[in-house]
Amino acid sequence: MARTEEIEDIAAAPGRTAARGWAAVAALAGATFTVVTSEMLPVGLLTPIGGALRVTEGTAGLTLTVTGLVGAVSAPLLTPLLARFDRRTVLCALMGVLSVGNLLAAWSPHFAVMTAARVLVGVGMGGVWAIAAGLAVRLVPSRSVGPATSLVFSGIAVASVLGVPAGTYLGELRDWRSAFVAVGVLALVVLLALAALLPRLPAQQELLLGGVLRLIGDPPVRTGLAVVALLVTGHFAAYTYVRPVLEAVSGAGAGTIGTLLLVYGLAGVAGNFASGAGAGRSPRGTLLVIGAVLAATVALTPLLGGSVLAAGALLAVWGLSYGGVSVGTQTWLLASAPGAREGVSALFVGVFNGAIALGALLGGLTADGVGVTAVMWLGGGLAAAAFAVTAFGGSPRS
Image 1 (spheres, rainbow, N blue to C red):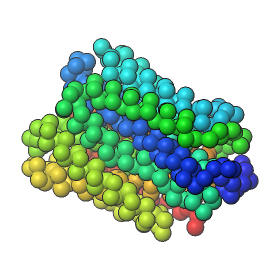
Image 2: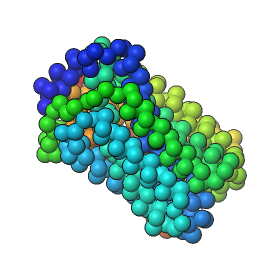
Image 3: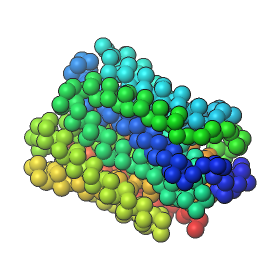
């Protein structure tokens, strides 16, 4: 597998112009943006979803848990299962599944239908994310592979910090169902873009599930995956319930919360690019900063976020730190297994989405059992644990 990936490093798709290659990479970024936005869309809409479907906010949070669990399983399973098929065909099919899931969620008359819809979203999201991550090397010349891969992953980072506020705003302008319709239509548009811009991408390597799982035995990979699990679980335990927390702590209304989440999103985009530059020089140092700042900010939100201004400042710092989690942890893992990019990316996607599911589940149990503000202390504690693992775990290779 390592030899195959070395060959891919020096061979972009033959006969393609640079402009067309970059257009295909942009379409992949659009795909990753759409799948991650679809996954996290319920975060800013929990209150109206729960009211319409007659469930508690903790139960409504399971819409995120289900999608994350399915995505966590589908990423490492679909990648080897579909390894024989043309990647353009696979991606278009998965985007179709994603669109159907979002449109079904928009129609859902009760929670059981919503759950089925979110299962479909999880299948599409996990497969697209894992497969798209390794395709830039086949679309652009070797000298451009690094920036092209960063652009593909920028879709994930931007969706992580902007998808929620965008959905929240649309939900306020119309209703929560309109937000799901919009993302379902966006998935269809991206499907068409992928079909038009991607070349034929026949399978180039044999990828077995056993080989993917054996990567976990490498101490730097194991450490990186543990940091992903802790940071993402802690973040989503808290962030899934950020709307009810802000309503309870700062007294902010729905419109104000949308603005606060936009502040968070803009700060997160800045954090993504700042952390990308830092992680290239020192993955460990970058993740240490992220873990420390995230732990302090999340834990202090219930204590210091009593006014809208203070809540906005805390959310800005929160976004700045969490915006670097995807690029920071991905850089760590790629440096830990440079000869197994596709395999380690599948593990990354699986753990990342499993952590989203676990965070939403733990946050829901905490919110329903202890109180909604307690989710912030849970999130802060897990981020602090990530700091410790980063400090003392196995370091990636240079």
